[in-house]
Length: 366
Image (cartoon, rainbow, N blue to C red; front, side):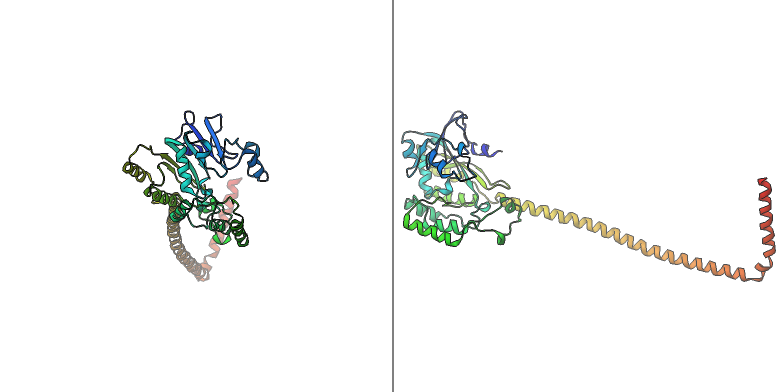
């Protein structure tokens, strides 16, 4: 299944109206594919100015932003009565300071039964590799304080731990943690943290950090506390050699009674006993074990052949020794015969016989 198919697993773009948040220059759905509007923290012109020196962003491809969020939430930007069938947010949730309020905000702009489709980086394969996963307490703290900016702690953690990482090496088990290069110095992390306290300027970082397992552990807490009115409708674990996973939520109708809603939420959370990385490691381990077993069997066969050849070599050596012995005995016997009186007395006869044989041969030839 393609990346796009995973994002649109529960979405019919031809019949449904949606919003994509943070599409930048790579929208999941283009305007000619369906009824789609775009929301971002800044206008199209501001985004082009912001990313003008970023080689990873294709400036002409930046979408026309319909809803400029700025410091406003999505509900305020689109209007209380403007409802949508789906919202897509790829690599957005990790940048949000207050995740709970953000999820509630998206729920407000969705129809009952509407879909929220998220693409989330798996920290085990990104520059967040060394960062601790976000805790429920951190989400609650940001929610209760209604955070609109990354915290000093989040800023310091981001800059002090970010590293350059090859996701494929991580998947292949060839990652050498001692050789991982840091992207920023500790002094820069401290500087950015101080600037945050002094200027309260917005710093775009990963505020939250997840693995598939840790993400759903947090979602279970939010469900239990009845803080969000969603249920999980699809989940695609991080694929081998990739760095992101996919989660789709569906808004539970407001008419659903509380107990039924709680049941729907709890039953929808995927139970991840072994995630894709663990399965890949198990597969790699099994492959190595199979290779070892195959080589061991091959080695046993070669050793058996070696033993057989060694045994045959010993037997051949013994046969050679015996043949040499017999040859020597025969030579000694021949010497005795040549030295005997009878051999010497019959020498003229043998000479005459050879002459006669030679003469008859010439006669027959003529």
